Length: 406
Image (cartoon, rainbow, N blue to C red):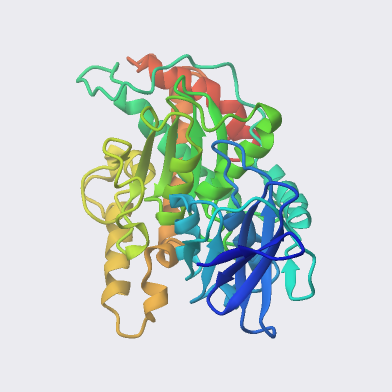
């Protein structure tokens, strides 16, 4: 990349065969991409320094906004140039839309208004985005359960810390049922859900996949950006020791955003319930961070759904288990010659009629546990895990406000 100053006080940056001019008046971070479909127009975003742990960068702003403007083809197979060192979040989101990212020389300046360069309307996108993120309200939750989610100890008595993690994963599953009802604006995407929980067990944020609206709106992205939106000026990254429970292993984009936004990269943890057999979740930033990611399921390799396993009563012994039926259905699709490769993806299968039963089963199981622990009825009198009772007491109002339980 070459650069020089011309007589007008502008810096000239060469990328490919194009030149991009910026003035020396104010500091800025820039991301730009060449539009071969619109007479060589250069789409760009420029901004002042991005705050620490922000889920937005010049690259992600450019991608988000172009996708909302139906310009996905501008990104696919193209290179996004940026003055910022690209993070795993930037690289992951670019990969998600089929683009690459390259850094150009760090500059200080503002993009000149030139007919050759078209500044994307990031502010309008953000206004619309913030309205969308209001759908992920967290009202209704009770007082902090004062747990210690770093405890994953499994014991033979009803006191181990492992059981409460299963409850939170069931919540991530059950929240997907909100997508099945009209009028909430969340029914355009894949059946994937995520929740953000503090170290003490407080529900902080949640999200479901809405990538029909924008390819980048995965469950984890919606969750993180809604938390950023709600915290406003108090945002300082995802809090120390937080836990994320997500129903599908995070892809490269989501893993990158998680690593970018956590306040303490050495104290958080991500639990996922279902492996992604595709390459989208292979060798991610989380995979490269030892101890920061763990599967949380019941034992097999495909579709081990905590919500289903715990929802099935002992009276079903001898009958086909729902989880086994789901796995059989998935295997049949994988071996079918009549099913297109796109429809064989795990994300597509999770929208199958058989697969969607597991999310309703998770909601049913939560309702049963709420009654069993005396949170929404009289306790059974059996020996109960106090950490589970505390978590359910905290979560009940939140789940009821979302229409997941009574």
